[in-house]
Image (tube, rainbow, N blue to C red; front, side):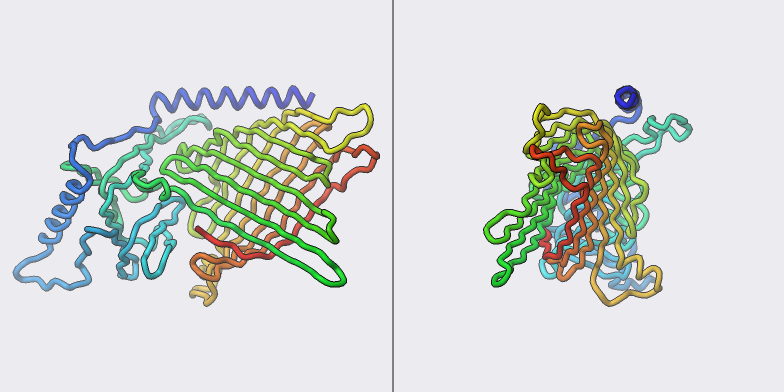
Length: 429
């Protein structure tokens, strides 16, 4: 019966995806608006500067007093950012996504700002902007996309209400609230990448000779329309020259942004190894549909789910049992990122003195057949405490659960639960 349910759900998702693609092709595909002027980036930048100067000159009259606060810097070799406090920053715009704008200053290094705190952004290089245009508000179908995306490249002039994108002699203007994301035009691949490495190390020498080493890595490539996400968690423990723990989990996820709320996981791969759970290696392949429940400066919450295939090779098995199993499964994920500092600021009504603290919850639940354990989950809860702009103190709790572990060759059964509590330093890059 369970296989019938799984197959039915798989075909339902495939049918819904096909319907979604057809609707997307007809009225909701990504429309790329290119610059056809044939001008170089420098020539387009010069046109943008002349446009700025023309707008500024209109503010001058013979009878008015013009204050220096109204003067906007000209972006020639740098980008300029104005905050709601009236402060201007000179540096390099990195990216805007998920209501967070990244800006790199030579003196203050990489800074993150809530989008509502940014009043102006003026770039000197061409950027790519992903714009959402509503086209079908009356659609009653859950899977029908209600938005068309425009992908526009040009020099950016962002203010409190609109974004102007300058393409040679043409200028396009859109309401600020329709911006999905902004990224570099791709002149440097490095601009798309970011990541973090956390190291946990403990060594005891004397009455108890023990070495514990855990590494966590997160690497992400973001563009205006997609996200490629890699994570790694590895744990090695040695006591008196004997291994007592050796497990590794590697994930790769490729998401495509369809609208502000919907995204599709085109492919997700996971590799897991834990000999002490009697798993020599386990690979999971998955596709999924995702939805953003909340995305604002205080909380980000994504959920996704879809069919998966699991292939497991066991360390040892009882006589007469297969050492390898292949199973279909349904897998569900949720990821929550809560900015504790901003929430406390809002609750208390004033800014607290300590630096940013984030709470990250990543939960994965898998329902499969008995031979692969019936059901299992992996939960990671991390408290990130910012020490500097690039260094964090991370506190992590990890819980792995497998309902029906496969017995070993000697008949012993691994425990259902595995727990890890980690404290380490994380480096952002």
